[in-house]
Length: 95
Image (cartoon, rainbow, N blue to C red; front, side):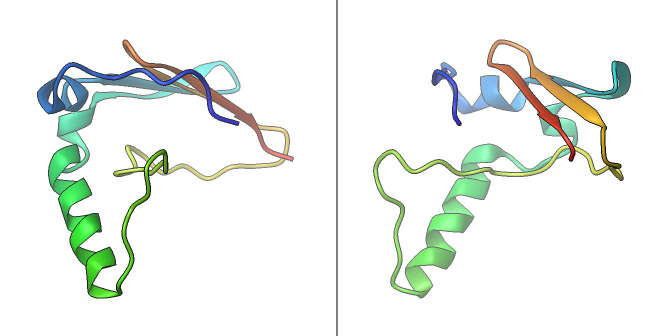
């Protein structure tokens, strides 16, 4: 399920987003988007180019992810929370 959309004012603002990830209430990652992933606009252009090579295009309203900030092993019962400053939070419990 997706939450309410938030539109950043610019690609630079999106690249400056601070991210904090918690596992079972303990902070395991904190950083700024531009330090860990390519520019989001560049990633989106690359995606569109690759899709076009296969005769596919993005549709209005389609949601995409332009990169991953960190990777961690998970175990059943883990509760994860990622907070994106100025955007919102995402939570998941691993079953």
